[in-house]
Length: 205
Ligand code: FE
Image (cartoon, rainbow, N blue to C red; front, side):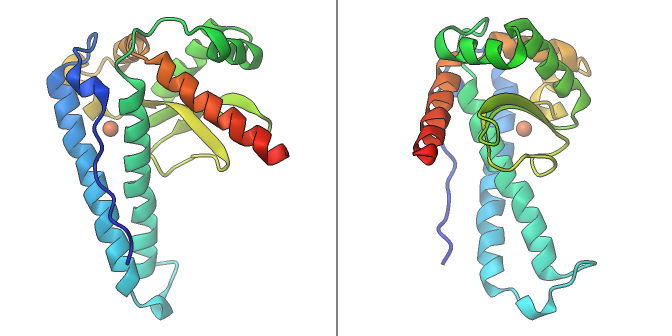
């Protein structure tokens, strides 16, 4: 039996965010809960599906496997995004700043690229520690299951689906992204980066 997952709590929901309304966050949480429920539903159905009918044009197993990547990707990306919010934003300090400056030349260059990726993406942009080269990279997503790069660990997730900002900003996505930067909890990002770097070091032995 596939183990059921459940929705988690995030500190950002108990805080007043700067420019992102409580209504937006609450509606967003409902969408996240939907991804949790669908992940459980799909996993349960996968246990019973007839594997011998697998077909790439259409088959039940294909539909379930593809939509699992969307539902579970939705869970993971929202858990990252929600946990990243609720901080003071601005410029990070310490290791995060050091690594961003190492890998993007400057904080401003990194920020400009992530913002552009967020405008160019249809659903997501991420900052991730990529085990391939041990560096931070920005990556783009049209959806949570389109374009994630394997063996890279996202440390910051930027949701750019309309539901993340339409209530507060209408179609002004760039203004929302500016506000997103003001709410980043850099301590959360730092924890994730430290874990990723530790794991990478352990792998090297
Ligand atoms: Fe979302």
